[in-house]
Length: 107
Length: 123
Image (cartoon, rainbow over all chains, first blue to last red):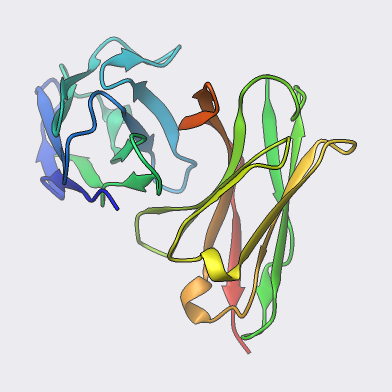
């Protein structure tokens, strides 16, 4: 199985700050990576696929990057509505696996 | 707009078989190259992929659960189902169904999700 490791596990930042979350795969996965946002008590929503392609309707302050084994999710200007847990997911090989999540809070 | 809705028991006893159904509306389960999947989330924990099925019957199961899982599709009713046998307290979780978008027979990411259903395993 490909193990996905996210860092940090949680972070607290101020409104307007740039926030970056890292996801590392235990082996190379090309760009077969997706990011999800799960707001408290809500359903996960797809944010980004193919490492850097924004899903329709996702605000442009979100961006993804990386390839191979190291990936990032960035929020250029953190907003109160971005409080959520963010998960990466690889789809290079079965079983499809998720990172453990990064909880983003407002300072 | 594609919508998915899980249904099934909220409380099951240990050792029984859990059966969940996901009804798809706003689109056909047998169109395109989509797989249809189940993901679960234990209380306060992260996401765990359970398995995915193609309308033609092809399946992928998580090896950690494979011995206890059966998935099926009913194209006439536009739904797919999950059976998980011999449940224990460790199977207590919110169970989500989702469309597993893909290409050329390979599923990629989950782009439409149901609202999730909390299943508690307890005597």
